[in-house]
Amino acid sequence: MPNIRPLSEPLALKAQKELNEVPERIDEDLAALRTWIAKQPHLRSRTDDQFLVAFLRGCKYSIERAKEKIDLYYSVRTSFKEIMTDRDPMSEKNLELIRLGVGLPLPNTITPDGCRVILIRPGVYDADKYHILDVMRISLMANDIHLMEDDNMMVAGQMGILDLSNVTMAHFLQFSPTFTKKMTVMNQEAMPLRLKGFHYINTPAGFETVYNMFRRFLNEKNRNRLYVHGDNLESLYQHIPQRLLPKEYGGEAGPIKDMIVQWEKKFMDYRDYFLEEAKYGTDEKKRPGRPKTEETIFGIDGSFRKLNVD
Image (cartoon, rainbow, N blue to C red; front, side, top):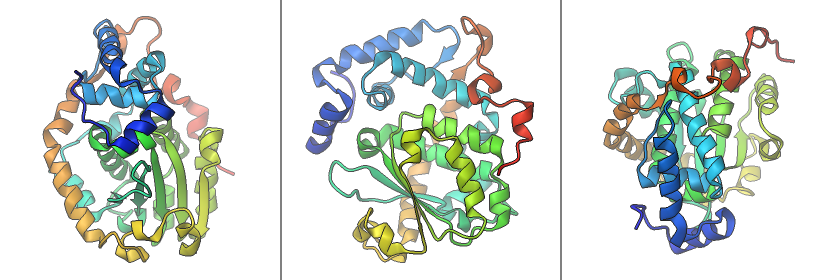
């Protein structure tokens, strides 16, 4: 039997119906992925069951797509070095950012088989002290935790609430086209996650510039799942029930500070996991055929770096 956490009944039904999961065949599918990984001279990948099944689910059990995504997952991380340095949650800067709670998964879902909702609050970090790269490093580490333990996210997908309260022009200026493209590829193409919607609240002046830049890099399906509510929380509640939200947003899920404490503990529990990540990645010199570079992965060249956004 595969060493995978059993799904709740509602999620098991959803996985079978929407992701083509056949419980009796999972072992065989995992073995096929492990055999393929072992034959890739350039790829150093985790091979434990829970990690690999996340990719099978994220690719609706297409073995070929799962292979491509695992390869891209590691080649993106190898290429995007800035975001993979210092993944120790106990380092001073990382711990400060974890305790700010820029990104917080809400504890409950709309239905038992519903997607995970993530509350993102970039306005809580000082843009003169921290860079968006540091913030996204923590976000990526949180995604790694979800990949290993959040069945709702891995089966049903994720939905984001981006609260832009207290975001300044200094925050927006950190979103260069190059960085935005890299993060979009990393989250949309290289993670086995299904985006179910993104809700923007408390949007300030200047928001449209970054929003339009971000939209350009999304595929059409994800572009159609963006919602801008301004400061109208009643509009948000039509999509995400009020009871799911923290007390600070008129909800019943408890105060934000309690969520931050829970997630700090989770980051610490995963410290060894994060430190082990240095062992994994790709060695492009050993890749059969054409090596993957920053240009081929992200489509970034010299002219793109100088791009002005309309």
